[in-house]
Length: 130
Length: 209
Figure 1 (cartoon, chains in turn red, green):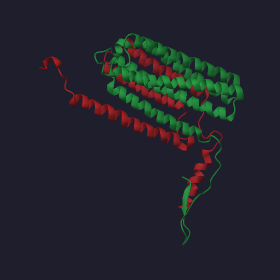
Figure 2 (cartoon, rainbow over the protein chains, first blue to last red):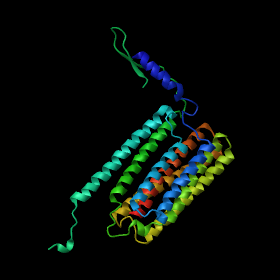
Figure 3 (cartoon, rainbow over the protein chains, first blue to last red):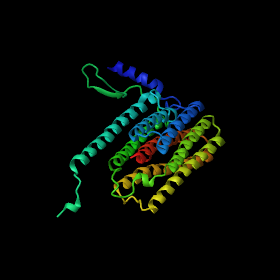
Figure 4 (cartoon, each protein chain N blue to C red):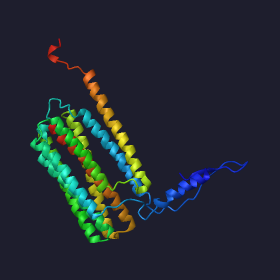
């Protein structure tokens, strides 16, 4: 066990304490790519909603949501410099944990409260009251 | 992680830290700040969930379609996106140790951030003037809480930005100041990520509702 622990430690210590603590940097190219993609991914959903280019609102909503998800990933990679290597992968682990928490909390809240609305709150017509 | 159990024959187990290496100052700051950002992300997730649940309860009051001006929101989004790329330029010039250019880009970032806040406050003032106050309906309560919290974050980001510009002007791009500027960089880009959620869920989907 001791040797195993030492090996792990040696592996971890090898990269963990570089001059900038293992945080990743961007370059002019990556920033500009990220910016270009962000502009397109912002402009398209605004254009879709403002002009009503697609008649079906549900399809528009779906496209808008997908574009937002893509833009979040673009920002993560090109502006926040997310990768699996920085800080020995601990930033990625923290983010994955957060994403799981967020997904559980969001879907759970929306799901439960939607059903509460549908099943527990019949519409009272006050004019029918005695 | 570094604690291992070594049990030699017949004696008590010994717990000790093997191979303790040097921890230079600030070595774990970026990871720590990242974890703070993730916890902040949870706050916003809760506010989004609240808005998702309450966003349709207008209490016979104004709905998103009556209140939101997408042109203004598009302008706002542009301001925040531009401030993101100019902060990126500030980081790039910082790595080249060009202090004057770094300060210039930081100042431009601050101005875009200020423009964002100005537009947002104008929008809020307009809504409140029309009677769409946070007290009006559950939709408006959750709207003002979510968007207001984001705006508050931008405000504190601006305070932090000005503080760091003064620090950089007085002490130069020292190791500590670089580290602080990188933390603010993460904070600023994170706020832009949250804004993607805001303009998508609140404004665009609100107009489609």
